[in-house]
Length: 304
Image (cartoon, rainbow, N blue to C red):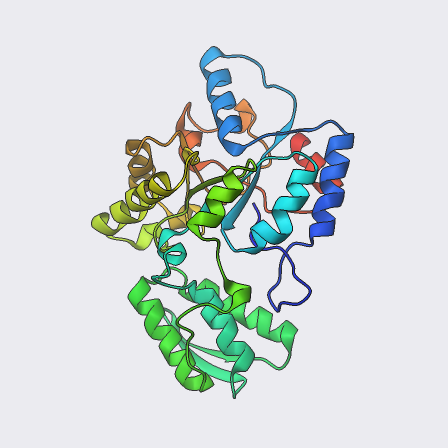
């Protein structure tokens, strides 16, 4: 599971493309199979149905949110090693109807005229103070964790309050470093082997959504991706992705939309039969490891 890729000229935190290049070179040297997450899911489903033994170790790379650095920094490295990967995108952000709120938060903190905010959260007011980039990053992650399960209107209100305290206006269109891929960009990348899938309409925590909202978030995003792209992924990717962020209702919604499975961010180092849930249930909460560029960490996961 990956997100952003580091650009030395930008302020955000991301994966170092050279670290990725080194990891892929090592995996190729070790002849570790790298396949798309769609192909991996289908293969495991077939193996389960046939009762066959696991095939040799294989890795699938996924990237959430669909920022432009996927095209400029990640895709060339993956292509260099002939490695497939899948990107999960948020249509309302792609269409310019909203921005990722965590980018608004980072923007406000960078330009804030004060380094102390009082942020309203569900568990009471959070006093956010910072003095440098490191402490600002830690505070931002704390604020994100406290408010990510609010609905869109509540998060928008909190961002407005942070904007007021920072004395900095929210941006209506993202600055270049927060830009996301367009549908046209994605179609061009499809021609180079990149796959794209749905990551909900607005990146809402589905477990907090009413039934109608959840239906729109899942079905609407799948429909939009299928309309715009030629070879969309057959998987849905839950926003945030912890077990507290989606429910069995959301699993069934993805299944009814014709998905072959749905991806979480729950950590599981192996998909071996001994570690899976009831037959078939794992498909609707496929686990992922957070990206780690150290080869030893990746390879040890096969034996955990």
